[in-house]
Image 1 (cartoon, rainbow, N blue to C red):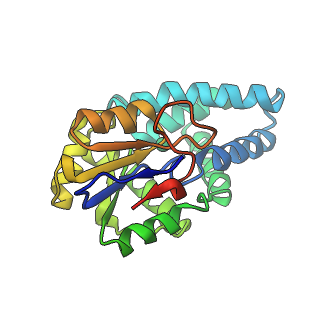
Image 2 (spheres, rainbow, N blue to C red):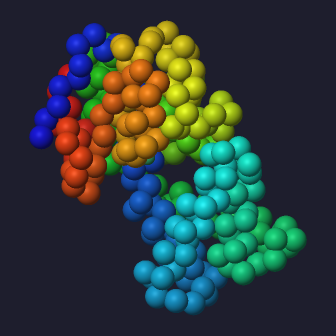
Length: 226
Ligand SMILES: [Mg+2]
């Protein structure tokens, strides 16, 4: 199903992970490689289930501001590999190993950069609103060839507030010189991206790449008519 941008929009905000950047594929491949390298026992399904359970729990602690981005990663790796949290050098090495593996699998969705180019050609400004570490998120964007300037990337790790909190949307709108009814948020997460943006007064479009289950959502950015 195609969806047309509402009238009067001057700014398009996009989520990064699983909207422009294929987080699921990149991270799944990295976790399997990482588990093999550290001889983690279990079949791939079980290994992935454990990894994402830890991610769900500790990344949320980062979103809430209870742990730094680095610390939540260290805790997850310690629990995943069974390394004592006091073994800082071993944890640091494992962390770096995972990052290298993860980066080797980084990939964009094929509709990502073409969509951004369509927006720019239509004189729309484009920004990224993402829950994550600003350095990591900008590196991902550069690596996968997404044309958004660094000062148009709004990361929870630098703003001190995370989606779905409306404040992150308001801060991004202020920085881009726009306001809610002239901005649309496009993302894959119904709570953080879709409802969060609506609560802040923006328009919102939900991307469901594995198949639409929610009315008025889209499977690909190609389905957005500017
Ligand atoms: Mg996402």
